[in-house]
Image (tube, rainbow, N blue to C red; front, side, top):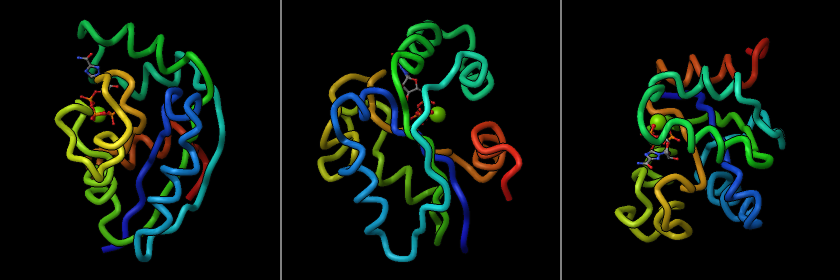
Length: 137
Ligand code: RTP
Ligand code: MG
């Protein structure tokens, strides 16, 4: 089942020079294709929409502060079961709980600075693709 998902390489990944490493892992998955890609410093309004589900949580403001702290890479990836696949490739939210071999498990230690976002469902993917790449189809 071919799907499309929204991926963000967060500011920590860009600052640490891990763009190539992470994109390489995505590119090497059989049949997955990167169909849009942009280096972009995300603004607060975009992130408020993106992270609306977390508004009011204690980590919300520090999360927005972090996510606006430097450029991110926004990309769309298409392919077989790519939504679930990118969540697996990323690993769980807490990098210390993430298995080695996953992006968060290999490169992260801090929950907030966990390198990558990937849409968590078909509904989220549809919503998030419109936020970051409006007018594309
Ligand atoms: P994401 O939305 O970024 O793909 O990550 P996720 O689904 O794995 O995690 P989620 O629960 O949606 O949380 C969004 C992002 O907020 C930061 N966070 N900090 N306790 C904390 O300090 C905390 N909890 C979450 C992380 O950057 C997480 O990815
Ligand atoms: Mg999430």
